[in-house]
Image (cartoon, rainbow, N blue to C red):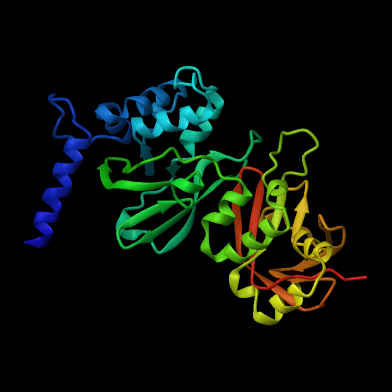
Length: 321
């Protein structure tokens, strides 16, 4: 009985949110594009899909999960770009990249979302053929689903989940999910909270927010990011005893500048870092210059707008002169 009531409630809510037109095909399950077009609170999404020629993608074969921003969400996003920016005049390439950043190429019902998981969106990192796509960090606490750290981190929160479509599922979100850079992704994942705190203390956050196209940029970056458990008390004690300059050297030793190196393209031999010294990688093990003790890569290919992050289980150290 409880399950029946729950199903009736979800169905009624979906009808309210996506008030569909009466026609001879009203009993046929709609595609994701149909749902967006029919919903009164999704007129901006509809127009955005039309401008970017993505209606056919979400109307066709395939299986998708779409995080659908409401009109209010789009208006908030456009306002952040400028008081005169609208769906009609925003750069169409920017708009397309943003829309694809809301789409995952598989169906993910809210019940199947774990406590945290990375998924690849359909938004390409670059215009190059075969480009990797931007990663999305999804968290669930109870029934609350949060994307990329939530609204305070350029992400969003799901307000209505599991609107079924013939080619996937739609989850309504309260913000436009902006394309995350390395700092955004690091801040979104609680397992990087120690690292992000140390980067902020050393004033390194702006450097890792550089875009690939700005003048004199150091981007793209490949970051080997220690998880919180890498910062054991002995490691923190050692780090705390260092001068400010040496602390910066430790942190920049985890960064490779000018390259977006995915896990399938990590070179053998020495890899030069932003700090200036090198380390080597064999398989999933990193051998640093300072300790000669292997650290392990435990998560790969978190793709950001300005580079890629690989998580490691230890802090790697340069050789201190």
